[in-house]
Length: 274
Image (cartoon, rainbow, N blue to C red):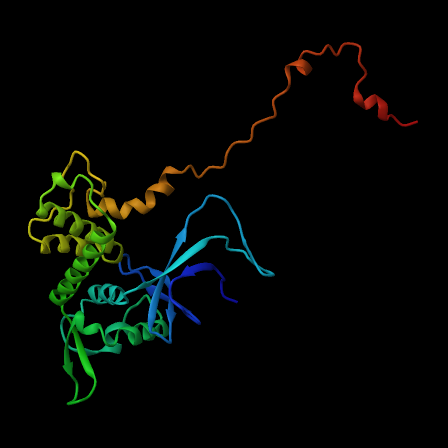
């Protein structure tokens, strides 16, 4: 029996399949959920809490008391991680050969990834027909991958502009405002790419530095660099003390501590055999 969790999800889904795929940033196996009807991939984000709990829904008890949020994820980020690690730049290959050689993920889970990205892989690879009118062969192209990531950065930056009003806007020029949102967009996408790719993204935007300039009334305090940003999720665990709290002895009231016990019988004297 698989693990059951309680999660919120925006989309209307009937059934989700659990997949173990390499994390696009670290390459380690990570659990994702896949909707086979929509060819949609979802990631689970857990809400941290310090107490142990469980869920009671109707008449069923769910042992995992954590709360999860399911958000749709672009599967090309996982493809980019696999292609980048495999260095598949030398020759054209069928799509199956590009991914099934990955030593981490299982073949069945990779096939689900292939079905979800078959129409999108041209954003990362050069394509060539194996036979006229037949299936396509693919060759990883890092330049195309960088252009695709740049489009992602612009899309995220445009979304951030609509939800994050800048305070003290009079202290910033139009270029400084644009750089602010581009920087925050790269930090957001950095969760799904390697540090090396994040550095390349900063280099792709002329004059964009990792460090946010200092302003008198800056409304946002971003990370100073990509490395700092990737450590933000671990700071909370590092700050918490893992050792259990020490048990303290109950305090003895002063009135009892000062009682004169001279001449009083011990308690055991009342339980002697007859």
